[in-house]
Image: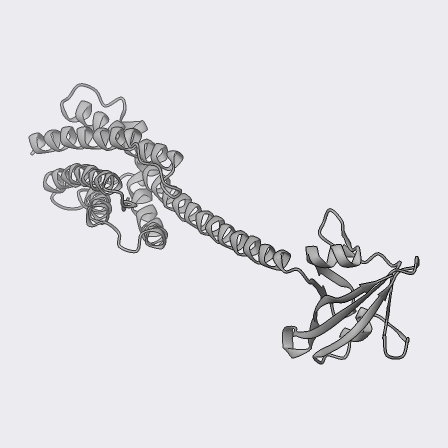
Length: 225
Length: 95
């Protein structure tokens, strides 16, 4: 029976050593099975190489000196494998998040490109009437500016006027109705420059169905000094 | 009737961490490779037989315990070779 034990220990030692070497020499890297995962797996296999060597020495009658350390190696084996599995799971989660972020970034870039390609102006207003987004056309036509954090500020030098009766209005006032609006307006700068525009405001639904702001699109109808 | 406390600790760890290990790996690899699963079962068998040898048939169960570790080692090698082949073939592998 002792011969079976020794043969088993020799096979075990060689097999675990081979597994450690294969894990260390795998050339394939993936976001989940990273180099650190492979190294940890090799470390786990090496624990049982030590156990095998200890058993061979013990059962061939050479020495049982390693037997006391063998227990530590055995106890560390499964927690190491569990840690590897946990690391692989976390790697997968991180990889999924990174992929989702890349897809969202591509979609965002595409949408911004489309919005900026439109020759007219597009503004997004929040429910309070503040401008939260302006495309390049709006920035060009209304001299809006974005700060480093992407917040949009309308240069307050111009005013909006209803060309039919000359009464003043504002983007917030137009958008606050929550209904689809399409009307001609006149933008007046302090230096007398005027720009006739055709503006449409479309309400956006927010969470719970309340007004979530408005999308305001406009294009120049005519320009005159 | 002799067994070492570390052997009990091994078995308790196997019982406690085994399901965690399987669940975590299944999250990553929906189909756990048979060789890997069998390797873990063989290791678990080794932990059981090393305690059993303290109660009955000590020589037989001791031999079976060591055979279990040998089988587990071979199965780990098989699993890694399968993973390497799958990775080489352009797949993601299954380790």
